Image 1: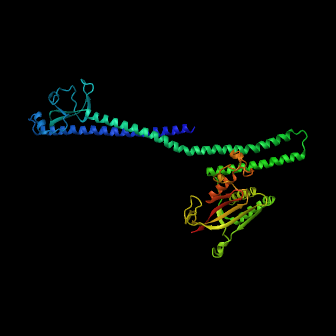
Image 2: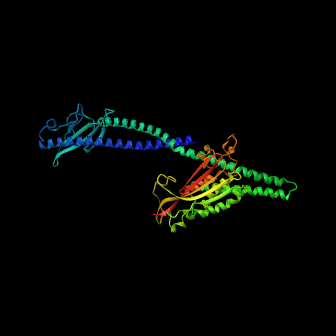
Image 3: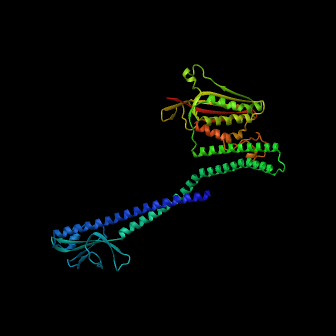
Length: 465
């Protein structure tokens, strides 16, 4: 499929360029041809004017003498003929008379000799007269090969140049179309992988739901308690499907750019308190120590007016809740019993050399808004640390990929799993990275196997300049 598209692109590049070059070459050909003809016509008319002045100055003087003594012809191929007022040939520089009717024409015309199949002449015929008295007709001729010879060379040069250009464009088109198809091929491969992973994630709960329903329908003497258990299983599976569909919809809208974030002043300390409180029950079930630490500013770092908004930023509350819920729930899930999960929030300065993403600059970071120009010089940093089983170093670069989980069933590995098989879909960290990016922030992960993992999220704080 991609090779066929690449061939079509290269062909279109070549065809369009060939048409443009053909139009250009045709324009050059017509311009040069008309210029050569105009130059010959000017030369013929100049000869006519010189001879005509000589005859009018001394009508009794012979034409031959006037031509030889007064007319300076640089082109040896020019021939003259003098006709009487009645149209009879009186004198000629040609070796033999031309069998061409006499037609007065000062603009120049191309004539074909009847006794020569391949000979053309360019001629100017002038009526020479004094007052109303016609002295005769002067016809000046020039061989047409003086035009065709350079034109033929020009056609050859243009054809050769156009051919070489079309060949070069074809090769360049093939190369450039290959370069243009690379991101398309990569996107297509990612889409195939995304579709395959989504199908895999959807197939399992749907199959389980179908199995439970079939078992319930085939039970000859249904038991109420058994049916309640099966309905609870179906409920959990449908909730899982609902979360998966919501995650897929979020990422699809994120990719298409149609997702709308509602930014408003958001107290991140209150948000983290709410998220931590929601995760306390899950942590208590595993006997985990879940704590939150807010690093308050010192007296010299801030004024009393800034204390209330010290941990406030412009963000979407719901999406930030989703971001930190994913991170904290993952930490709780992958930390063994009697472990510890610690969440820390502090305000940091964005100094020289510290970047959040490609949209940020060093030292002075600006964002334009309709109301004012904002200077981003500070950020809020959230660290989610756990004493869990850790993540292998080879998995860290792919940790934020969609559907990626450190799980042999997902990576097709035959080794013993380092992390327990998660119950999620593998989209949580991808969504966390997308939400962080939409808030112009940065998310990082540091992990040591069998010791723990720390996720660090840095979000910019806007202050008026």
